[in-house]
Length: 592
Image (cartoon, rainbow, N blue to C red):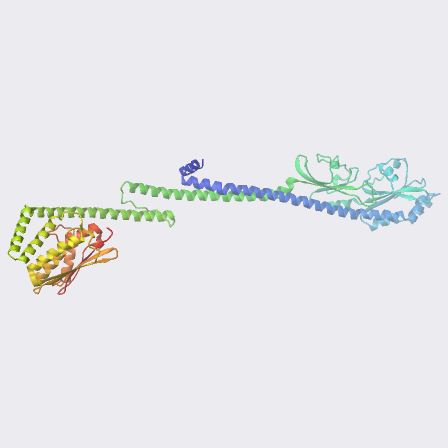
């Protein structure tokens, strides 16, 4: 399966590979990371909102406890107020007496003036001589039937309740309800201290979420939205019964929206009931800002990714287009067009490849020209060698007759005591036999030197003291294979031109030295030498590809065979100085 996947990948175009790689390696991971970051911000925003709401509820609980401590202190003060006890328990004979008592007792108005949290103070007592002045109220049958009255008469603790009775002047506020016993008279009254509604609402008005406070009967005693005050939790348009929610954090649906609800309860000291604090916020409201920021971020990321995708597409298009142009150039080259030129610009790898392609085409063109030139040279050399062989074959009429004749002359000279003549005839026979074997591809350096030595001895017999020669060869170099008739023409050239041009004769020296990976062959003579102009003319003649103009193997033939066999650097190197002699040098690779 992995190999099949690799094969399918290799079959895709480079442009598609780049785009798919970008989508898989960049776009999809970035979108996944972006989605994770958005969810993380949403969760963080939700956690911060929950923590903030909890802190706000705790703060409201503290503020509410401080506010409820004020009516508690007022009730404690009135519990010890003997003037209040005397005034409510006295049986008044006339209205004038009652009015005078009311005017003399000003504690209730003083509390309202002292504490802005106090909206009013009422005291209910069963005394038919009292008149209802909204502060001191006689208890009647209607009052006795109210839930708060009946509950207060059963306990000595404080009760917190929203009083919503149908009275002439209804309270409709959160109130402290407390029984005030008069042990000396074995009677008791009911004290109600009402909290200021504006102060309660002001405490919640600054809250960021919908927050309300309710008593244990479900009446809303304070709310961020003042319209909720006086309503019960059951009647509020939340879609759930808030009165049944326990303390803590709750994930609920309110009117179909995902919401969170924080519920807490405050039970003041010496109270039989407490107040419930409820704070509600919609999840959408919390994550709205986070969603907006996340949406903007996702749009920016998407735009950047799309821009990057367009950039990758453009780069892939430009890259593939340049590669296609290079492919067309290669196809033209493969069809044999050596004049193709790549004009792909740029300094990147493709631009470098284009320039290397041009270098390669130029090298191939030069190589082809060299091959053609070498082929022409080889053809010319083969033709020249064939011509030489034909001329030599023409002179080889009945070679056995010639050799037998020479052998007869040698034996006759030997029998007559002419040993020198006999030796020269023997050398001449060997030399002619070697010349007739010129068709062999390679010969050893040892055999070549034997033929050179035979030639020099014959010439020594001919010129006597006018010719001196010397052969120097390094040990171990005599088995190197070389083309035949390479050194003998050089020795012949040195002898002929040296003896003919110099009356006192010539000295020919042949040095063969093994130097590293080549064998250096040096042929020197101390003949007349050549002028620079003549030397230039000879060098031009040697390196010229023209056919030979004579019937012997000359310097040009030797040079061309060396170049064809070993390369240009191994051809003849001629140096000469007029009046001092000439030196011809060439090298033979050892490992060829």
